Length: 42
Image (cartoon, rainbow, N blue to C red; front, side):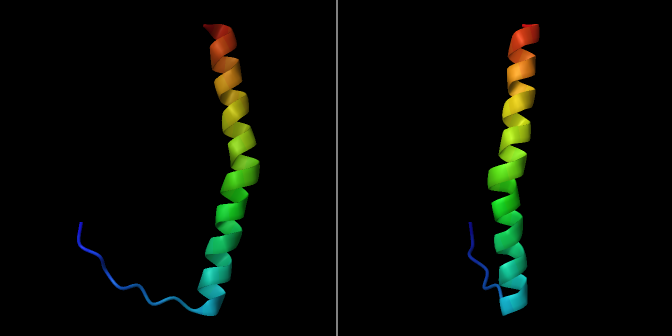
């Protein structure tokens, strides 16, 4: 895979960090709950 230089502003970086935190906390719990329900259904 060829690496491509990405230019990112400080504002863009903060936005990506917030999105990552959202995915790691809120979305992870949502996905875990859906997996739990799927397991219960067999």
